[in-house]
Image (cartoon, rainbow, N blue to C red):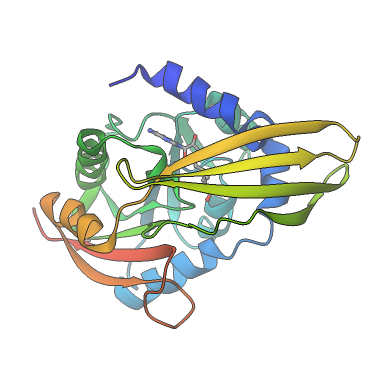
Length: 248
Ligand SMILES: C[S@@+](CC[C@H](N)C(=O)[O-])C[C@H]1O[C@@H](n2cnc3c(N)ncnc32)[C@H](O)[C@@H]1O
């Protein structure tokens, strides 16, 4: 395993938004994943009171979920955690690596949202992450994941505008798919409001549905649902997976 600090530093260095967590929050401000997560919890575990979120980033989902649950967040990038402490001081957000973290607490709900699982690329390390999920799950606990289950293979670059705190940025996105490693790389070219240009890339491991199911089950969870949140079943590329912990 690469040393956690080195890997967290590498993730931060390659993603422009992680170098500027305030920009990350601005770009993600229209995300509905916390609401989706809450709907799934209310459907499958309406009595849940406690929740732990692995790969919580700046805590933007936790801020919403903390209105309903007693929450802890864990992320391995000190920059994201520091930003979370500054802008969301009421939240319990800790620095930790989801491959190895052991908080000594078992919760009603374990979440890993916003594709955080996809930043772990090695199969053995993915198993370790699921062992971490199990180690923090009470009997009957719910696991809610939001992760890529199919690659984005679109060859043509797309251009989008992004509202940032300092004005509008323009980003051109190109996707690359490596079937052998199941890594989907998103290459971005930014033209920032200042006129400066920057490039970054995000490398995410795709776990196909049957493969994801296997990791979930091997760690002692039973899959209850896998859907993309559009109401159309599972069409990809991203899915919400809901599972129940079946061990004591
Ligand atoms: C795309 S962000 C998602 C953050 C948050 N869940 C959200 O939806 O806004 C992915 C996060 O996963 C975190 N991450 C990646 N690998 C991790 C690991 N091994 N342990 C803890 N956090 C990790 C990154 O630091 C980053 O904050």
